[in-house]
Image (cartoon, rainbow, N blue to C red; front, side, top):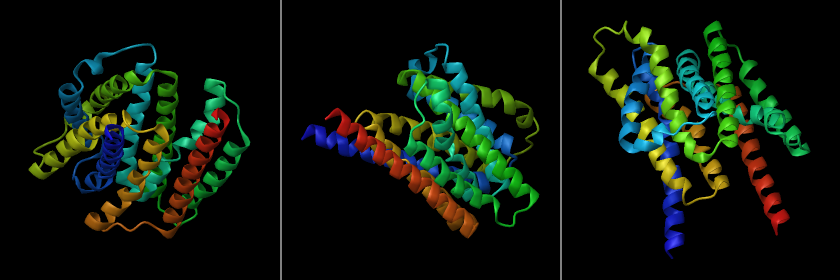
Length: 284
């Protein structure tokens, strides 16, 4: 009974973390600061939260933690910039093309085989990704889309490095990544003059709740659920992100973006379930 209860609590924790992560888009849209100022302030609040929640875990270092931190820095800064320039749907869905890059780079970096299922997945996801660029978009949206793709690439790099590294170093990599973000954004922060209280509070929410507390909840959930469950439940983040933006910011994603997002997320979900089921059959 205890194991079942812990599993339910773990599933709920992953779900709550994903919901909290999904709030990033709407707050980035609502805050009246530049992208790098938002990223810098969020990083400052995240660092304080991590120091309270994770303590010694923040200071575990090996050769790969700094490399992962550099990738994580790219995830944070590029995504904020992309969300400011293009629609929230485009930003989050294009960031979630990260598994595509993983499938391409994994055989090179980790020496795995490029299987047929991965090739099919790449082709279908590429079709979904292409839909984001066939609609009529202005230069700002195009730049935002490209930044979102770059964010997905750094996300893939982070996933690959962490797969090569041990799980206990993930918190340290994220902590170091936020230090780098704060350093990179310090020049922009120096030009913040009389920010409004709502803007500061929203940045605090992003750092303390959307990143800090969410990762604490997610870390707890991972102790009680399998990786495939966590992966599938986390898909709720890119699904809800544009929903919150539509409700609170009245930004409506294009039909192309919605279609492309559905193609990418459903393809990756199907591949995850298929490969995991094949793995279990092989073990049995």
